[in-house]
Length: 406
Ligand code: DWN
Image (cartoon, rainbow, N blue to C red; front, side, top):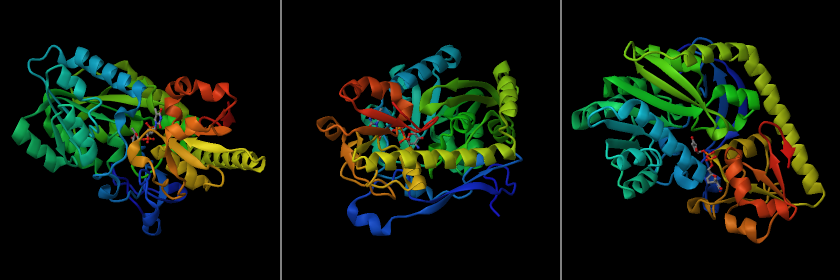
């Protein structure tokens, strides 16, 4: 039986999404025969309440020199991270002399570059060399590496301890989470703080956003599981704040025990989660049923569109789309191509279902009848940009929180 990555309790998967490829494994035709698949099962740990994948592919299969996700592709995310940096700077750093900021999974530098611009000592860490190079080209100091307790010891020697430790959409990627947290605990000065944000379990459950489950997302965290995780290392959750990003995220602030006051937000969120049933196995049984219903509705909508001879293009080749397409068994007979702004994804095929990925100008050159929006988390930005599509009669298909056409 698998064991919880956080507390080693025995865990039993409450559902499987079936055989899944690497979510960001966009591939060329010649590599389809050797494509890697694994069983995407999901479990809830009744002891620490972390929702998790019992089995995650090796990290080198997911994060490497051709990692195709660049955080900076969305304008609204650039604004979000500038505001994020501004708020932690005002609250914690501005009063310090010569602060030192570390960010793990810094990707193309979208968040940490704001601290570079403030003139602060900083260090980004990212295992994917190509995205780290983009951060370096902006002047960010980056180590290409996976972070753990060993890397933390190296950084303490070379740079000293940090005042602020950041992670945005990263902690949920790390199955060696206890080694990571122990590394953070050692790296942070006694008065230092860790601020991280992630897609939020409560939002995923409430909106049936099952596409947040894929190889990279080994955890879906909540206040309950984050509190448990850090208490193992004499650290405490001191603040929690919902964020609108990625369809509904949560920002967690953590400090060494007894060093900062704990705000009321923590108790309030723990109570909300109890009411929402996030600690109850029955919640996950219902979630499984909601996923199946959502899958059946999406497939039957796409089949009825195909029967009428109308066309559907996918909009944005997100990591999330890999779970949707493979779980629902949607291939190119139902979605003829996926348009995306990322050059490295062009001329490749979607993982598993092998739908062609095309540059977004192909969408503009010849609009389909429907666009299936895989990046619904960027809906406002995309609807604004694609007003002409709707104006000439194009319809959007959304599947979170429910399957609808607009
Ligand atoms: O944690 C993660 C989050 C932060 O980002 C990762 N594991 C990987 C990634 O997830 P995702 O791929 O689901 O992220 P997004 O931000 O929902 O989607 C990005 C994709 O959407 C890119 O390929 C670019 C594309 N896109 C587009 O084609 N047109 C995005 C926008 C805003 C657009 O207008």
